[in-house]
Length: 204
Ligand SMILES: [Zn+2]
Image (cartoon, rainbow, N blue to C red):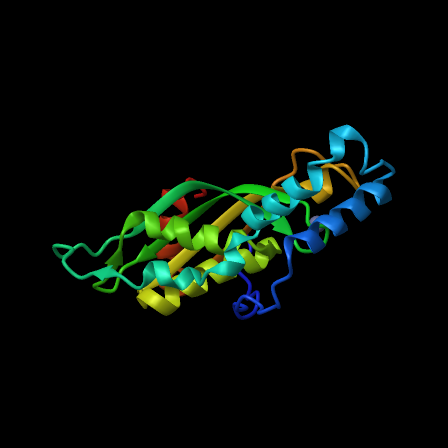
């Protein structure tokens, strides 16, 4: 378990939109690069499908994940314990190979009077996951976003994932899981609080 600093969260880069036809041309080029013929029947619709799939894989660039945390609730009946979401599945793509990263995240925070709807934490994760990522930055961005918008007493994010760029190419190491974590506030400063949250995540 590593809770080093991974650097500041990066905003979504702003790039000029391009027409879908340009994306399709690029896919045709990649098909030729792979060694196949983009004009054979089975591949004719593939460039358009891939272009649309990329819209889905990378829809996180169209949104600011922080908006999901803009609506908070103060009426929590004096609740002052850890709020945790475990085993949230996600898919992302590594920015080095654009290969799938498939994993699950555990997100916890200790509220400071305000809480958010429970599904919103998962939406923040998805907003950052649907971009080109490295797992360390994804972990940091989710935690930083929660810290910034909820100003809680503590935030803990643990992500476990497998990287297709490792399992399907290169060293061909299947089944290896990478774990990253980001602890902030009380979970970083206080051993007992960190142990408690890790135990709740099933990582204790
Ligand atoms: Zn990679």
